[in-house]
Figure (tube, one colour):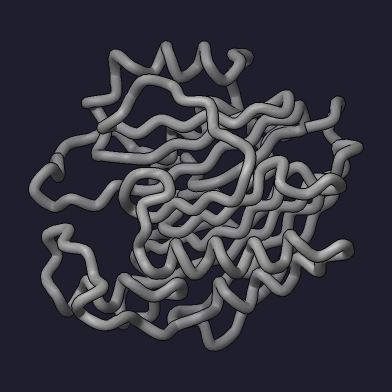
Length: 257
C-alpha cells in the first residue's frame, strides 16, 4: 500500500475502519481480493510475482497492512518481499507482539517498510527504522511512505476526510472512495524529498497516482463493527483508473475487535 487511512476506536459502533490505496507498477501480476485457495482463512489481494500481499485479514480476526518507506538512498537490490510480512502474520499462530518481536532480527533483509498488524482489539506498528513494536493509540491515523502519521499533504487531508465521516452518527463509509480517487497533486513547496526527484515527488503526492507505468492499482475499504461483523470491499482499476471492477466480502470474526 502507499496510502492507509484508519480510524481505530474512534466511533462507538465501528472500532475499526480502514481506507487504503495500493500503488504498484502496472506490469506486476496481481490477483484481486478473494479467499486464497492455499490458505482459505486469508482474505486479501495477492502479488502473483512473490506470493505475498499488501493488506489482508483472516477469519480468525487478524489484520495486516504494509507500506514502503521511500528513501532511494537506502534501497537494497536484493531483498525479501515486503508482502511476506503481511502474509506471514495472517498465516501464523502468533499474536501480534510475538510476531513483531520475532521479526526484529530479520528486519534488515527487507527494503524499508511500515507494518500495521492487529487482532483482539489491539493494533501494533513497526517500521524498519523503528523496529520496536508500538501499540497504536485510539484515533484517526494515516500512513504513506514515511513514519506513521507523518504530515504529508495527502495523509493530512485523508485523515481530515476520514474524521469528518467517522464523526457522523450514521456514517456512509463508501464515501471514503471519493478521497481515495483524488488525482490532484500538491505544490512543490509541500512535497517531501525522498530521492526520486521533484517531478516524481509531485506525481506520487496524489492520493490516487496516475502515470503511464506506475500508479494506483486498487482501493480497499474495511469496516468492522462492535460485534465483529466485517465488510471488506475492493475496487481494482485498469491502468490509470478510468474503470474498475469491485469485489465485496462479508464475514464475522470470532470475537469483537
